[in-house]
Image 1 (cartoon, protein in one colour):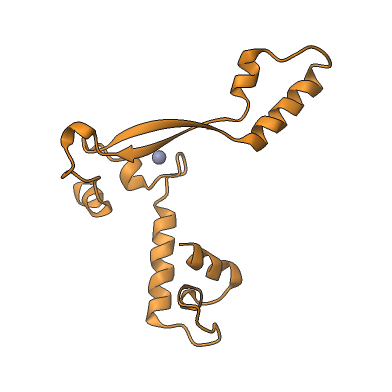
Image 2 (cartoon, rainbow, N blue to C red):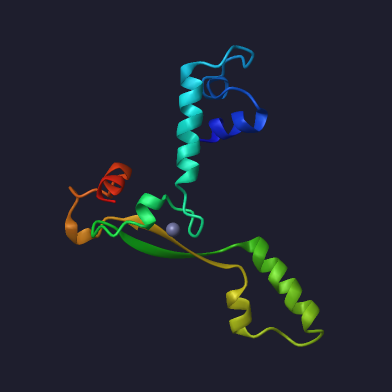
Length: 130
Ligand SMILES: [Zn+2]
């Protein structure tokens, strides 16, 4: 994905980046297929959550979402600076500090009670089941 994205940024054919070929050759059938596949994947990313739509919009019982928490230190520093500008004196409350830079995100997984043989639904299954 990174190499195809880089080829788009550089304005060269995808195979030149993927296989480190010279970019001055004519586009091949593989170049067109790679670009089309890349665009299709981009078009299937949910604008709300950034996951593939065939996972985040699936109602399959084979998916559960684990929610994780992390801290964006950049955002935390900016939010702390804003707080200090808004509050000329005093100290921030513990709740204020705890929310600065806090990020929640989720990852899909097969519920453990289904066993190791069950896999996440595929893109193909999502489109077949509508
Ligand atoms: Zn989504």
